[in-house]
Structure formats: structure tokens, C-alpha cells
Image (cartoon, rainbow, N blue to C red; front, side, top):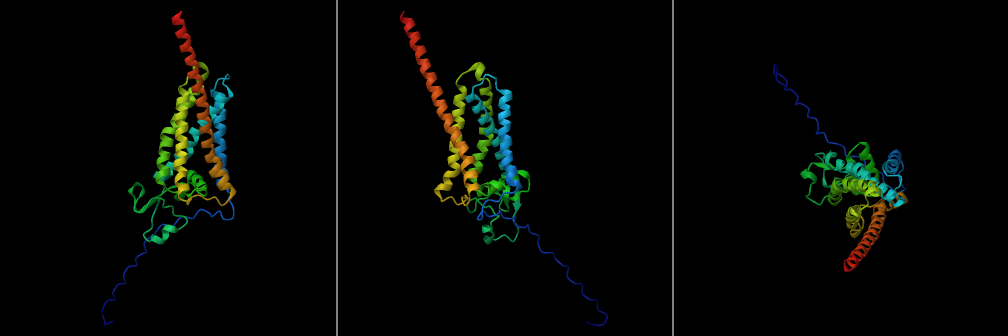
Length: 280
């Protein structure tokens, strides 16, 4: 350095770009189900909703209500609560809970166990290429709940287009319709009528169709998103909980067939009596 020359200032240090850490992966169930506080809380929440439906039936139904009416009321109210509280929170996670992809995100990261990319290539949820949406990226109570169920079916931790589309109809149409049926059942003892059976058939058919569209694509592709490696995820989460929305709708369709068939037979008898009276 020449005498009297000023030293050149050192170039400013540039901090490396900050990137969001990849979320923790959902624990593997290879060694059996992971039962923790979230597991217990999630199952307890289901019991609370069922108990709420039962106590509502005790309070709201007339004392003369039959056992069948009470079971139908409890089921439809439980159905509405599950759709509004649980599946409504699933939609909230899909639309409002997200993870900003780091600038270092690469093709190799797509196979990270915590990343839930469920849309086809070059298809982006809400048109956002830089964000991933779903419960897997949240820390709230309902995010944790769906992270728990995603141990059995990974689609519920991210955004599967078929599942989300079905859940929009379930929450926006199915749940209000179930509440309407409950109101009709409340007035059954006073008014009677068959309108309730029509709407129960509509709802039950929708539930069965929704169940098929939820699991049909999985079965036809080898169930890549389902974890059947342990008894709890297979028999409790997948078979039992989803089986309820098969068994009860089928039973309702059977009861509706009997009720409508009986009403038609009675109407035919009345028409015959009226016809005979005219001849007299």
C-alpha cells in the first residue's frame, strides 16, 4: 500500500437469504400408532360432539318421540356438528394455513416426508406457486387434529383437489341440510308427514357418494396415501369412523323406502275407498 493512501473499505457482509425450515414430518407408524396428547384430544372431541347431540335430543325432542326418531335426530345432529366443526376446520386449513416455500426448494424436496404436494404437476392450489397449504403446516388445535388423522390418510394434511371440493359441498350444503332434518324430526310427533324422508334420502345419498369419491380414487390407484400398517389407523380411523357414514346412510335409505312404500300403500287404499264411495 502506497504511503498516504487510504485503505479501501471492506465490502459489506451480505447475510445469506433466509429460508423457512421444512416442517417436521408426521411420525412414521412402522412401529405402531403414535398415541399422544393430540390423539387423545382428537378422540375426546368426537365423543363430546356425540354426547352433545344426545343431550340435545333429550332437551329438544318431545317426550313421546320414538326410539327411531331419537336415533335419527342424534345421527343428523352429530353429522352436522362433525361437518361444521371438524371438516369446516379442514377447509380453513386448506385456505388460510400455508407454508412459504424456501428459495432453496428443489425437486428433491418434493419427496420430503413433511411436504404434502397432492396436486398434479404444474397445478397450484389458489394459483400460488410459492406456497403450500394444509393442516401439516399449522400449529393450531385444529391443524394438530388433522395432522393426527393424516397419519392414516396423508391427503388430509395437505390439499387434495377431490377431497377439498367434496368438503366444500359437505360443509356448505350437507351440514345445513342435516340441521333442517333435525328440525323436521322435532315436529314429527305434531305434524307427521313424509317431507323429512325425502331430505334424509337426499342427504344419505350425498354421504354415500362423497364416501366413494373420497376413497374410490385411492383404491383404484393402490391406496398410495393410506396407511394401513397398524390396527389403529386402519380399523379406527379409516374403517370405523368412515364406516359410520356408510352404515347409517344405508340404514336411512332402507327406513325411507319402508316409510314411503307404506305411505303409498295407504294412499292407494284411501283412493280405492273414495272410488267405491263414488259408486254408491
